[in-house]
Length: 473
Image (cartoon, rainbow, N blue to C red; front, side, top):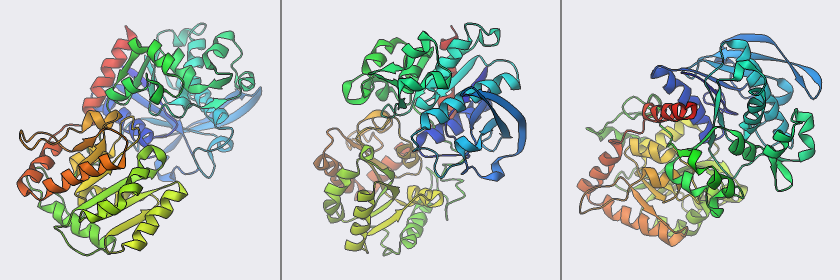
């Protein structure tokens, strides 16, 4: 099957969150199971030159806002699959990937350029896989092209929702300048007196997916649908949840190049050495029998940071270390720094993002805190399972799908999860986990239960292939 995946970000070329991980890993996994998958993503100012192998197209001339626009495309396989990176300096060479008032225009341009590039490089794909609001423009443009351009007649679209909270809103008056002049396009984008790229993708694409079974249900409710739950309910028979995978070439404690020692489900001794290295990294006392609670996250309201704030004193009173890596809202950054200053022998904090340190935290910590308010899929809980770091999560989205509560009687389960979004409920699970930690045999069983689960991208890719085949029927 020939598949084109279009995404605003993809590792290793760019990343701000889980979308980048998914878009970087899926085409590689599809290729490994025998499909012709290509990735198309922007070339940002932040994209490292070492990933740009060659100039594939030097004369990608486009008409944009009624004027000729010269772009080009680099080619790379740095993510393990064929990738084209669209280079348009005025659009993408900026200090950050997102956050500009004209983001809607930047990604409308990217979508238009991506479809033009696809025509330049060969036969039409059977599937164009679009990701999040940034690609809602392509859903509408491709549907329009299919009506009059024979090249696109056999192509169908899959639209994946990674986070319903971000919908790509802008003024309806901008649509003509972006090339959307038909009544069909206007109706597709129109939402509550403004234009929504997310709504357009949801309405026009042939099938819809999201990144966990639970989140597919949640986005049909007012709590998680952000005003579009009527549309997800309307299209529920074309909506499916597929849990993201983990790239085990990158996230595997047996081979992880970022770790000072390796370990496996059969021999966990190296994990203790990783714990020692993690404590040393933060200049904390080398007390290897004291548990480490860890968090690697964006410091936003979505991620449940407020629950950790409320429970911080009790977390430390339970007798553990607390180590956090992340950045985001300034109040949360200040809180973590203040907590570190209050208990410098028990708390380690790194404000920012450090990939090497993230790997060490996953390997060296004992418990991983993800009390998210909502979490479409989540990846860190799956990294944690693989590394024998027991996740403590809220039962929402992909966290609910991938973490099973530990049952000491049946010795089943791989973590601890709570329901109501309250600090006291998080603390209950922390205390349960702390109690289980003292039973070394039980704790090893919880770890091995998690490490034995196959959350590989190969499994996820096969599920996507089934979705593509269903879309083509």
